[in-house]
Length: 133
Image 1 (tube, rainbow, N blue to C red):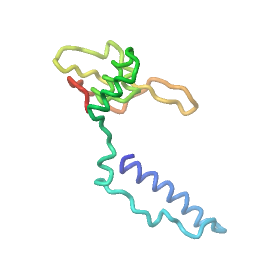
Image 2 (cartoon, rainbow, N blue to C red):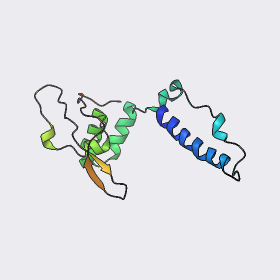
Image 3 (cartoon, rainbow, N blue to C red):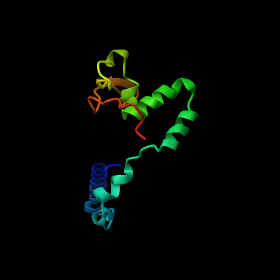
Image 4 (tube, helix red, strand yellow):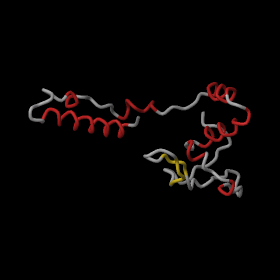
């Protein structure tokens, strides 16, 4: 989790527990979230995970032959699952040596269940010649 996400979740939990402290009658004597040390950016720097070349090779070896291309696409582009699986042939242009498919749609989850094609978080990701390992 990123530093901002952690801070937001901590703030939410702090508010919930503080409501219990402020309730009449009080449901809790103190708010343990009031004295929590949140991680600094340097504490969370290593949270981003990248595959080592050996891990990438192992992953490719474990998937069905007809699924290897999608693994290569995920690792090579850095696109999210919902973005890769929403790509269509018309998204690809090969005018340059490094095609950059515009990420125009991504699969999203509905609150009540199911999925739909929606707006992606990022707009464009260049395709490298190799995986991001």
